[in-house]
Length: 465
Image (cartoon, rainbow, N blue to C red):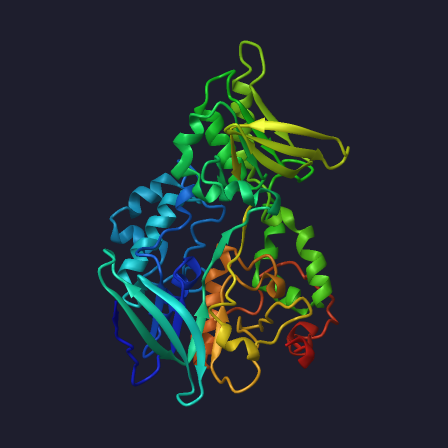
């Protein structure tokens, strides 16, 4: 390894950590700000968006206008329509009449943007972010590795502001972590589904755990791929039913900036109580997928008999163990309290994702982070971590603020809006005009305090830092 600790004479205005859809949105919109010096670092060698779940035919759950830029700047050269024009597919898309595009096409669009933007630097692993009092800037240490692995360089850049878009990681329930860690057992998260799909198809019996969109898509894909009458499938969910996602037009207004502003004004305890109640906004299944599953199950009853596919809602996994090449799952019906053992050959955990922790990355800033009563970093209205002490720069976050901003934090439809808010805050001027009202619904009382006096904006006592 060569050691080339490079430092820039003039700090960047912004350095992004991670290039997922949200930081890619910010990079695309920052590209249109004259004089703004920004770079975005990503440890992988190219943009990839949930490659393990690019199942044939699966679509985005938001319309194509929820691209990287269009809901704020539809004239941007980095819009989805601009991508179609650049790839000479605009007219075919027009005739296709697709409001919801396939995930593979969204991934291809994002890869096109990431390749065209010079600010996107792949193969850069950011190791730490600290505050340099002398330079009055953040010091960002990173390791660069080229695509072949032949060149590895340690570097340091300085920047006045940082934005963290490090994404999420698969969530594995504690009772099953030992099974997933066992390389000899066919138990894994749905993030690896396509890589291990052929392995699953060869198993006599497969169990899918989790009733969100991913679990439904995995179950449907396996169901369609297995022989009639010998499906050998179990689908288990702790939820009381295999429920549809809230997709009514007024229901979707909870993914607007208006609702975000309302949610931020609520007390911390109220926000924490409210989020689990909103599970159907982001943990349900699309009506189209539910219909396709029922249609496929019904098709398999033609001629008599029932498919060998068991759907088990209201069922919790208590523990699991490997035995003679198979897996025993101890399951319990959460309403009846009845327990039993389910023996299966493979388990797919469609159990969602959790925010990737940034503690090690921000270890040098830990003394300055202001936290709430649950120990989570406070995030202000402009998506900045609340910092105390000598730090003059800002650390913005993307998709790490659900506890302060609500269910819209991971939603692609708010990506461009959040990028615009960050750019306006970063530059100190209105780079993008954002409308004051975005929903027909009035979410709070008209006499509620404004954002400047809301409990959500107030810093807790020093004892919580």
